[in-house]
Image (cartoon, rainbow, N blue to C red):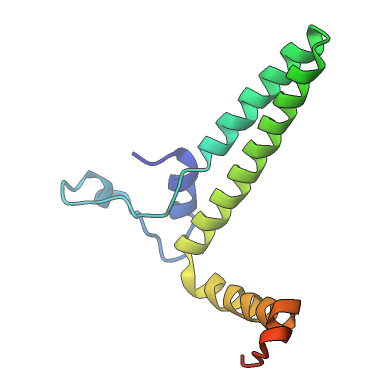
Amino acid sequence: MPSMFVIIAALSKPDGVIRGAARHDPAFRWPDVGPDPIWGMAVFVVGVVVMAAGGAGNWHWTFNVGMGTLLLGVVIFTVFVGIVAVKLDRDRYWKPLRKFFLFLRNNSLIGRLVGRRDG
């Protein structure tokens, strides 16, 4: 069962991936939209709890580990939300992403050294 975020994202699509009666059909399958962003939130909350424990006990290393865990949770959440957004609406996001990657390849130092200038 996908998370509430995936259900809301699928229901908010203009073409309506999930309709009312289809959910009760035994042959219905949830759309594969990628990883669940709630994992990033879980890591974030663990980081906040570790930071709180480290700050309350005046344990600096524990606080620093909690801060790193918190930032890791933010990165995981952001990456997973991006993956879900691209998978839900490929036509809207794929062309700009491809253009951006081509721009990075053609305008980076490595791209200039190799001599690739297509796009």
